[in-house]
Amino acid sequence: METNDRYSRRGFMKCSVAAAAAGSLVGGTGRPVEAAEAKAQRVFPRWRGFNLTHFFTKNSDQRPHEDYFRWMRDWGFDFVRLPMSYETWTEADDWYKVRESTLAKIDRIVEWGRRYGIHVSLNFHRGPGYCVNPPAEKKSLWKDAEALEAFLWHWRLFAKRYRGIPSQRVSFDLINEPSRPDERNMTREDYVRVMKVTTEAIRAVDPQRLVIIDGLAWGRDPVPELIELGVGQSNRGYDPMEISHYKAGWVNGERFPEPVWPDAEGKAHKWDRKRLEEHYQPWVDLARKGVGVHCGECGCYNKTSHAVFLAWFRDVLDILTEHNIGFALWNFSGSFGILDSGRADVDYQDFHGHKLDSGLLALLRKY
Image (cartoon, rainbow, N blue to C red; front, top):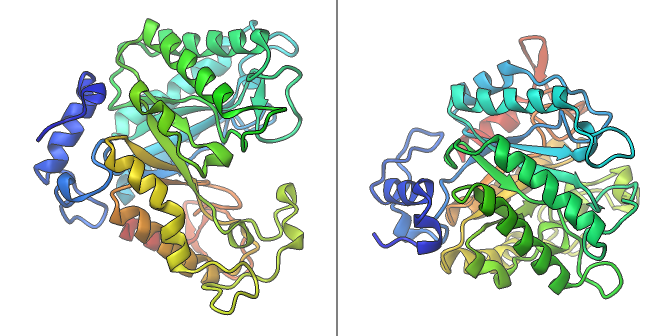
């Protein structure tokens, strides 16, 4: 099978595509994955897993659990995305003063990934100069040279730290959910420029590292301008937001109507399976051009009824799987997760002291 030269120079990409073509990759159901040639996404394995939020903000509980990795492996998952804030490993008000104790905890997650056969994708949820969540950074990654230089410095730090670890095990997801482009805050050209220079900075240290960039408009829109750069791209599984973020305060979800799926009469959000397919079609088109595509975040806040959530999410996962696009649930443990989600309408299973949403777990394992 022919492979894309941009990826085949990294042994990980070449091996993954060849294995898929031979039908040797096995999904969570135990059935061989179909030949890669028949799928839109032919570059990445169909990674399936979770986001872990231990380094998500400077106030996060920075105590990762090895058991999580063991359970993921036992359930058939192979991917962890680690959204991180640079504030967790730097001292306050000093971008360049590094706290080694935090980096050692991240090292531990990378090691657990090796031990349990789980790919770890390191993501800057908050990087110097940008975060999708408040508070806003004092400098702009897109407009200020000072912020960009700090952003590059931190990615070089990780590139040096994990140089020599193969991309089968570790990837770098540069910045979480860039906003929709506008002339004032970040143009499309700004985003392309910053992603290019960051990728080049990483490759100058570690030429073989797998780099992934998030789509624009908070992960909704692919960036074909970066195809020639040879990076993977990450989308989201949250639309319609009226379902996934119902009553979520950080997006003013209290204003959303009671979720339904599908909305056949157009009373709530006017989404159905057909509109979902149209929503993901640009990503399918990108994948058919030889770009690795993965859904880096997906899932639903715990205020949407469980039945509506699972009905909608089944369609999301079905569409992604049809095109060989993997996914990472937000999150493993917490208000979107399979553990301790706090849903009022779930008959939880007791699992090692946690409340397990066995219905959601069964759906994820099916795909």
